[in-house]
Length: 194
Image (tube, rainbow, N blue to C red; front, side):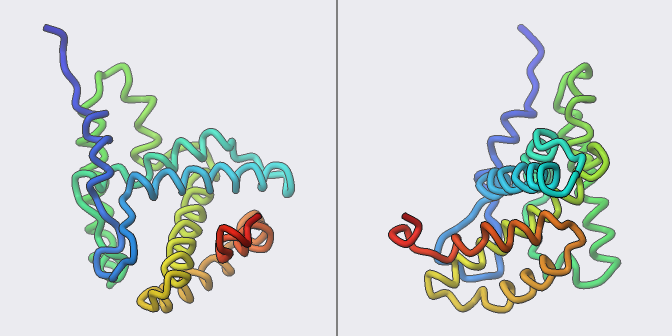
């Protein structure tokens, strides 16, 4: 019988980890859905950065890194942001737990495949990729807040304000460009989009 590896079976379980656990949601978002949106946004930010601002981040690398950015949460679950960043000790301890989780996932691959996934899971991809993925992650969170607010859920009002402020403070010009040229469409209805 051939050797078996559980890596991809674990990845498929991302759909069972819900985000925004402390918030009342009008619709649930899991980390698989979130990771897809972050990948789309990271790719877009890298393209905008390259085409408009002379950036050097490869869009494919950014998208791949984004797809795996929350993979350790398969084993840890999603810790709500207010808890995760409550103080430096909790933040640092959680980072260590995520690193252990990432290493556990890597151990589920055959030795010869691990190098291809190590940079993605350990967030040590090419220079600049991490910043683009973090910005895309923040954009995805803000879009979720906008969608909840559009559905009448004021539970997300403060999260939306804080997330928008963080995005506006981003040093990446592609973030400002995306916010100016693409973000307003997320507040429109389907009929208004046409």
